[in-house]
Length: 427
Image (cartoon, rainbow, N blue to C red; front, side, top):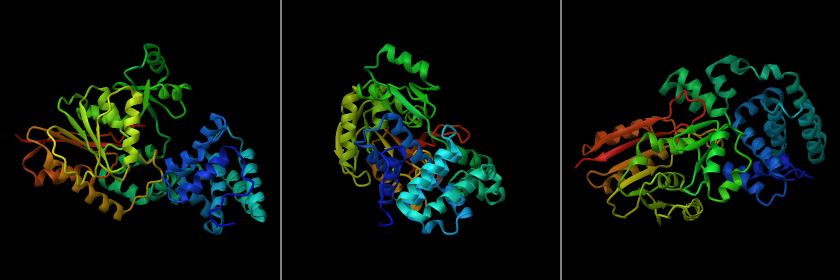
């Protein structure tokens, strides 16, 4: 059996689906791609699929902490078969975070799978998980990790130390701790009603939601209405992270009167939010044909007109334009670690992204006509990619002025970390 093989006699259940997703993740897929691939074609009930999603994302979100525990209790955990490590992580996650799953069930299921796949290594699995169960009070205490130091808190909340130290240096210890805690939590979900949403649907969402934000409905983890999928398929609602539409409101983009070019459009989440608000988005571009195709389909399903679509690299686009421009630029994603726990942060990556962001901003700003506005948006919390990028641009371009700037408050308990600035070319 190769190191990246699936376990033998893999059960057709939530844990089996999660194990398939972990293998895809090791093969280079993103977390969302890996999970979608595992769930595709599965005939399991939706409850089992939901459990698989929780197990997969729960382990990914807490990987640093789980690895720390394994290194404390096992001699050479990295030498174990990769799939066995996944089995142990799923069981350990259940022990620590899933109150509805009995400890014996999580342990027995893991030991049985290891026994079927790796024979005598089942004794290692049993000893490790029983030890974790006995010492649960210790490993649930943040002070157990590196004697409660700041580095230990980063481990406890499973945030790379480089990122934790960046936040502490940029925003101070209290804000850094807020960000560590928020980034480790399961993210909230958001639903934007479409033009065709009936009064009954709006009333249902109003009663079911945990918070209202602008024109959207926000739901705590696990609290989406049971008919959400049916509502999405009918085009009555669109799923979007609340912060993604909220920043548009905070920056005033939902009040823009001029034609808009969304030139890092992706799957079109912000495009849909602006079209829903009545903004004239005339053109969408992206480097990915696949994402643009999905954008068009989402517009049609949501009941809004499909803008002009152009496959183009925002850093090299040659199209002339007389209107406003929105740049939702590629970034390090440090504000959405709860949704994208597979993001790998590193100094080289920061430098690479900063160069790309600067190229996109400079190139698109050169296309902006006098009196028009450009929005620069990220989903990261890194001053180099955010406020420093904006201030450097303004320092080098005296023909631009700052109109608006906003960043998610660090103390907000559940809203993703976003940053945005609106720049205007002087007449």
